[in-house]
Length: 246
Image (cartoon, rainbow, N blue to C red):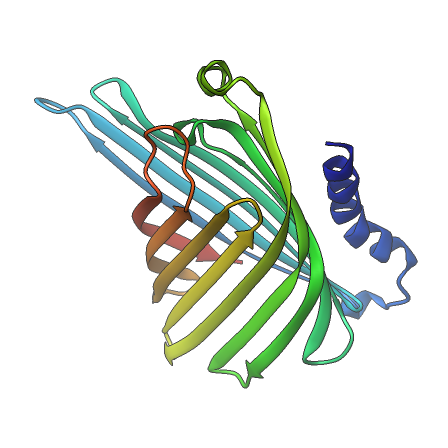
């Protein structure tokens, strides 16, 4: 646990330490973001409600490019909670040149339907941009990391221990392609391999409606080859949201 806290502290502090020590002028600062929201509400014979929210921020400070991500998912069916997930991530990339960089990343996820109270991952390593020519972008990252997972009370009683942790090999790939001036396809893969294999894939298409407002359709797949108890290995999530860029 001490290793995890140390790693997370480094991840969280690195971008701000770089900000304090970097030699840059005011014009080097850039900040951009995207906010998403999708909701469903039905009443009558069936009472259901769902809410999906996401906030993605990007900041450039000299040689550092920092990214912040916050997601929330809530679903209720006839007053019964059927899904609840909160996810936060931060990453700092130190650019060596136009195509290579060092990354520091950490994320924290709360999803009680997996049998864990929470899961935290921290990693550091090397990233490379293979394609960055305007309409197409492809990058990959690889490095060592550490994962810590806290079991919920039911699983603790069943298994006889409270947490799991291990060193992992972390890898990710990001691909984007501008289909047209107003639409884009994005594909993200993330995998962490240690005592088990955990992965996440997100495929999305965005299409501009007007100005900075767009419609986004996304399919998210989460995979764990060793799920707890009677849990399933694969979770899928399909969303249609409004996206605002700023």
